Image (cartoon, rainbow, N blue to C red; front, side, top):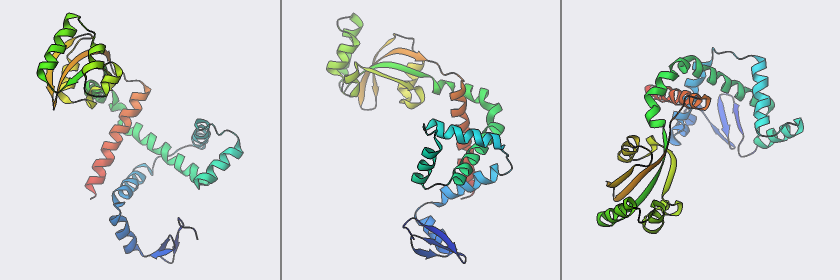
Length: 245
């Protein structure tokens, strides 16, 4: 029996050559904080159990799975399965579950995407901006006036004076979603026009000079739809798990 073998004998579970009863398995899972994950998967299984998938859908998912990994020849597919410790039936079972989850997402939240996108759009918009970061208001004001007067470019100032990784990129940061930025910084950039140079402002421990370089508005394309579906699904799963704790 190998170290990773798991089997069941007369109501007991054998894991890594050790035998556990049901109570011990539960205690072991709680000890290693595995119960929330198991609860999550059980909740999902119950939610999708009535959803059906066709043999054609499973066959397409199977071929697409290997095509994405550039494993078209059957012998390569079999070799990959052996490496992963999976049988063909186990992989098909996983793909069938993934298909059901995808259908579950579409059925429950597909119609909500336009409205949800509008709610989230401001946070999903991306920006590219220039940043100079210092720890002195006096220095920041001097640098701001030099940039404003055209005595030096933003890139030159950032390379010479900025304290941070942006000094290695001529001060350029992004593209980055507004939701991932400091709220004060995001608020400034959201109300800026391209090319607008802002005077020094305090952000945490730093004094910064900011200029908006590019605004990239989020769009409800297929990739965004999938992202929002995943987001709504994870919110539902999280709430469902919490209600069972």
